[in-house]
Image (cartoon, rainbow, N blue to C red; front, side, top):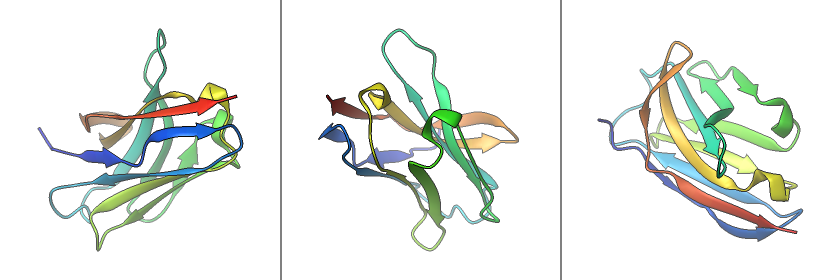
Length: 116
């Protein structure tokens, strides 16, 4: 179990912004891929964005152009900048360490609620 710790969630109005952070207990420089997932009530957990150690990124179609994932290896932290938030972005957001394309280690999640 890797104690990833997410923070930065909260309640925001539609059109607003939030930045999520995911802190790892040790160095992430050797971790190839980290990602953010989300799970809304009654839905399966789904990929939002992922970033490799070289900085390559990928996004779900629903968040392209609005969300930006980044990582700071010096701070052992991965970020998710979320702009132009919509009510349908409401979910619990989870940070993950991926092995290949498979998430293997999770954080505890942080709630994001977007009001209309």
